[in-house]
Length: 277
Image (tube, rainbow, N blue to C red):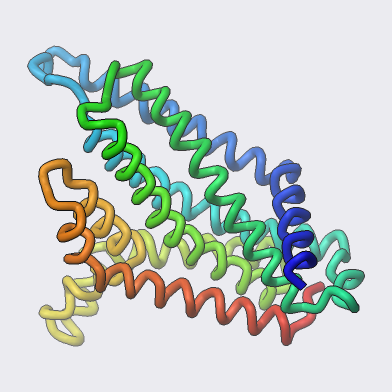
């Protein structure tokens, strides 16, 4: 069974890396990051901030975290849609959902393949982002290399969890909704709701006016991006204690993992019980 899951996962990875739509989205993602890096370097060279002493590792890591969380989650939603859309249009599932490949084997393989594709993209983006900042702004590593790599690993893993949430939700919606365009629109809408609307102060305060303003901060803090930002910013603190910084945000880690568990469980159950066509 493990062999079959790995076979499906490798096929999924190959499908995604050769899909034209996925390639275009990732290419646009990288171009946006390069433009963003260049614009930051231009701003830092303005006369009114000529006293600026240069970017630090903390600045780079925080900007990378924003990119992996905000843009990376959109990419995850698109990948989830593409994963199911490829199978719908190719009728591959109608062939695979027979012995020796059962539905649980397929969904496990697809989730693993998509998950590794996401971390693959994140690593490539991180390398490109690092070289772009180094070219535009000079040396940005002002801590030991071991510590810098540890911070980078934390950012990759925590942002990966956030991305997997939107990947699973997108897969779920793509299975439930038959129309491809509507399914993708629904996936992007969920992203905007959870990442842009719920964290918005106006939305939180509007709910606070109904349930009480003491809930305003709680409502906004439960958004996946705010949870992820909190974990990363509290851990990637050059002057702080790593263990204590991370442990102080352990409730946020638990909430993120609960979100991920629910999203994966629902997509798993729906995939097993519902025809995908």
